[in-house]
Amino acid sequence: MTTVSPQLDDLGDALERATAADLAAKRRRRAPRKLALTIAALAVAIPGLAFAANALISSEEVAASLPAGTRMLQGTEPRCTVVKADVEYHCVLTKPIAAPEVSDMKGTVEPTVDATKHVNGGCRSLDSDGRTWQCYIGQAAVEQRIIGAGFLGEYAPTPGVG
Image (cartoon, rainbow, N blue to C red; front, side, top):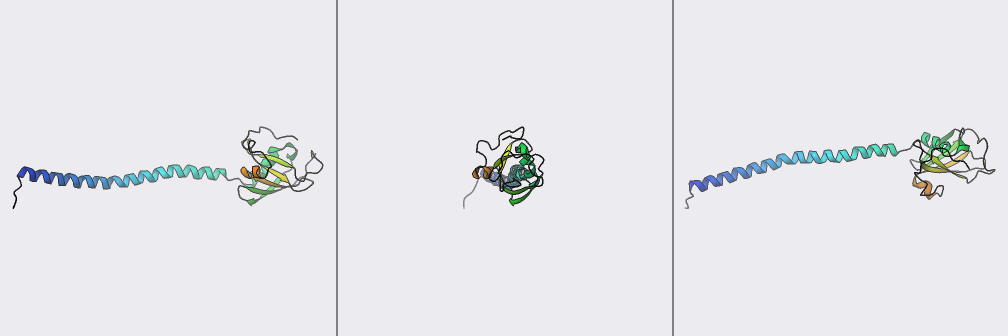
């Protein structure tokens, strides 16, 4: 049998206690680390959700954006319904265009302007009297060739003319 000096025995016990204490401390640190990671993830996710909610556009906002983009459509009181949420809307003017700038409005395209006075999409007239419009928001308006990519998001302080 080997004999261990009391000093070496004490050193072994001290190392054992230190190792046990270190492992316990690491276990305690994991919970706060997980909590910190969860808090960090929420800090990123919650503003993202808020932005997503703000990015959604209602039928009423689309209806308001049509006359905000084109002066001849002011006073026409558009009513819009969702075709594809946040992308496509079908709009009907409740009042006729007072002085159409063209005799046959079918196929005419006009930009839409949001409440911040920025171009947010555009609409295409579906009939000759200009009472029915198909509107597209964002990139969909560019894909429909209603507005150019460089025009999307541009500042438009007043409704366009002509």
